Image (cartoon, rainbow over all chains, first blue to last red; front, side):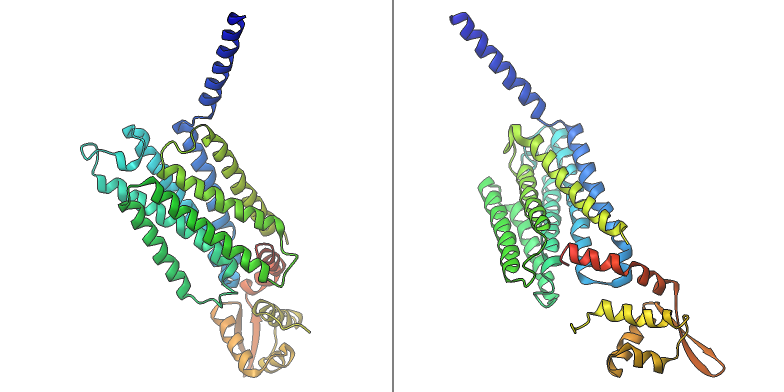
Length: 246
Length: 89
């Protein structure tokens, strides 16, 4: 009996180990993941170029800029991941001054945080600009807010601060989004779009946390990557379907 | 009748030119556009500036013609509206 018990535990342990091995993401997977997201974002950006050139519509402009900023943010994200893998450290703030100037790593982190916050703000603004009477000063306010978030990320070397900032950002975006939807006359608005946007916002925040707080997700990292990629692919499909149709 | 949006007014102006064998004088265009002369002037200048239309002088008379970009706008109008509607932009 004890023998069987031991064998059972060994099998369980083996299964757990192989699941861990499968789920822990290597640098190759990181590159593939970034490639999918950057390609989707740039395809959305360039795929809607003609529509914007024909209309100069502000909603289309902000929508395109959101995906351009997503592409830039993911580029810097993969760059940070490269630095982490290259120097074999847990987080960018752990990089020793002997390896590389710490300012270099921190500035990259700041740029990443700025672009990623702006991507979310642009996506929110693309939906809200009409309700906010296209007060273009608001977009400068968002730039300022993104800049403050970037500076916070550089100077506060505390995981809880990172986590708090991102949760606040997520709450703000989702709250604004749903309040506007409730007030909207278009009651039968596209449910799919709202679900995709909410998931996009949520998973984007998870991506930020993944960069800022090392080993936060551990075995769930790969699943997060798969779902994030699926969301961007769904968005690309929706865009191409609409842009391609006449 | 619902108030027309900017994109729709542009579509209507361009359509009027197209339906008149791509050549119309400014006065009938203003009349058929169904907007005030002040707004028409604004739209007209914008369409010229954005290269959707061009002016041609023929026998001392001014005619308005669609450019390739103008035709493209008409061709893509439905796509544009569907896209804006789909993503609530």
